[in-house]
Length: 177
Image 1 (spheres, rainbow, N blue to C red):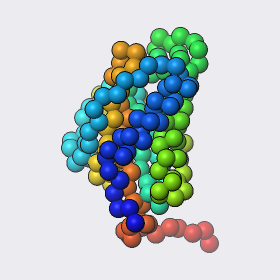
Image 2 (image 1 turned 180 degrees about the vertical axis):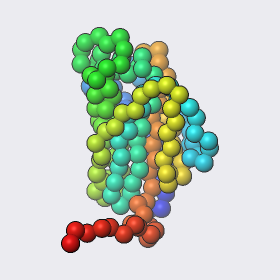
Image 3 (image 1 turned 120 degrees about the horizontal axis):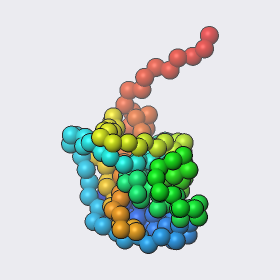
Image 4 (image 1 turned 90 degrees about the vertical axis):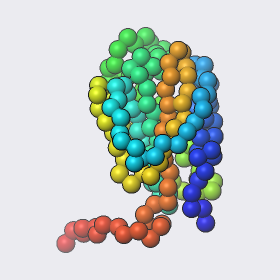
């Protein structure tokens, strides 16, 4: 039984998925930067930009997050939709959600070989200035930075055994009468 997936294996799966999507769907250059592990107990930092999140559920659970600047989000949408975007709008945010869905979906598929069936949530996109995000229960994140089109951006990924799998207490479910 696998109790923890090494950060290097997560980073490798994230890189492979990102390179696959960038080469086949976007035709954008992509350069790797060194990955690292960020402990969730670290104080959350204020952020500016765009984050596209997709949850993973099954015998293991977690989240994949693409974190980037509005400028990079516009570059992605321009490449994906073949139209120039100068600022954030619904189409740019939808493109970021789709990018997260494709990359995190590929990572999920990679890990299903060893972890069994996993499901994806509907993507969610957060954007703005001076905001904070925090995940309850995620002990650490593997941070995988990239550079593309003059922008540095990153994918943050956490994956751990689900509470039900690990025997942790689950809240009671209400049932209709």
